Each structure stands twice: as structure tokens, then as C-alpha cells.
Length: 184
Image (cartoon, rainbow, N blue to C red; front, side, top):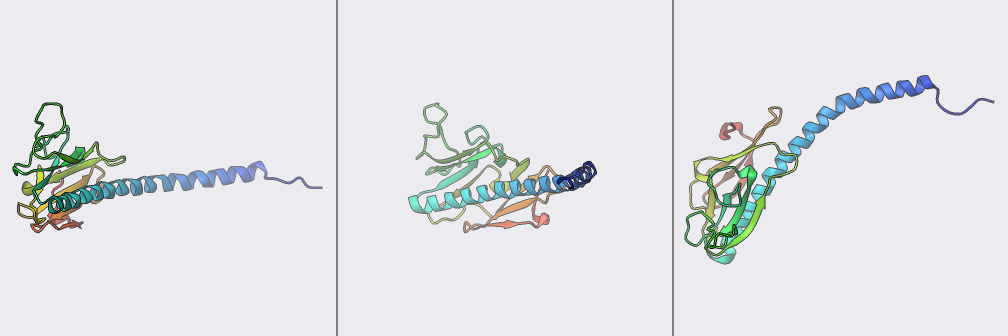
């Protein structure tokens, strides 16, 4: 009667083949994960810009979104560090802290705060001159400035940058045209 099971040689061959397959697959899989993180970062910013526009129309007053690395509209243009959406009736693009408690309570107040970027995203998100620090929408949903572009640039050179283009009427679209993007 013959014993059932695998021989040591068979197990070693299966183990060797598995190691070779994993060695090839893991780097490719990590690139896929990084690309997903870039798209996720882009999509979150697109949704927040659209939310800002909708809030301006819904509230019937100007609403802004600003790059907010330290919980304030610091003007540093680092969108990857987070952002805030707030009512902006005076139109200065800054969310004032009226009483020094670190909470945006000047103007009409904070609507949304998104801080500390996204798990797995390593890169920068920078806007051109018109959307460097903030984007403001009027009660009709129009952007106050000219067209603007925010470049989402991964640190990994193997990944392609992605851009957001904001038109004056407030439409946000995504582009992969690297001629329109400005990555450091």
C-alpha cells in the first residue's frame, strides 16, 4: 500500500515557483496600490470642490475652499495636507478665527474640514496661480477667477500625474495631459 501525500521534492518545487511568482507580482501590485492612492486623492479633492460649489448655490452666498495644512488657510498652497470649505461672505478666501480657539468661526463658519491626506498617497497637489491657495464660488456657482489647474503629482516617477481643471463656470474635470500639469 502506497502512502498518500507529497514528497519533499514536490513541496520544494511548489515553494520555489511560489517565491518566483511573488517576487514578480509584489512590485507590480505596489504600483497598482500607489496609482489607486493618487486617484483617491484626486477624487476626494474633486468631490470637495463640487461640494463647495453646491454649498454656494444652496446657501446663496460665496463659499470658498482653501488649502489648509495647519487647520487655517495659511496660503501655502499645499492641497495634499488638507483643505477647508467655509462660507466666505466677505470674499477674501480666508476662514477667520474670530476668537483664537483654532476653529474657523469668523464669516459664517466652517462647513467641511479635510485634514491629513490619504493613506498611501505620497506626492504633491499644487495649483497654478488662480487656484494656488483657494477657490471661491459665487451664489450662482461660478468661480471668481479664471480657469485653474491643480496638479496631483506622485513621488513615484513610474506613476503618471493627474490634473484637475476648474473652469470659470465652476465645472471640474480631470485630465492626464501632462502638458497642462506642473509637477515639481
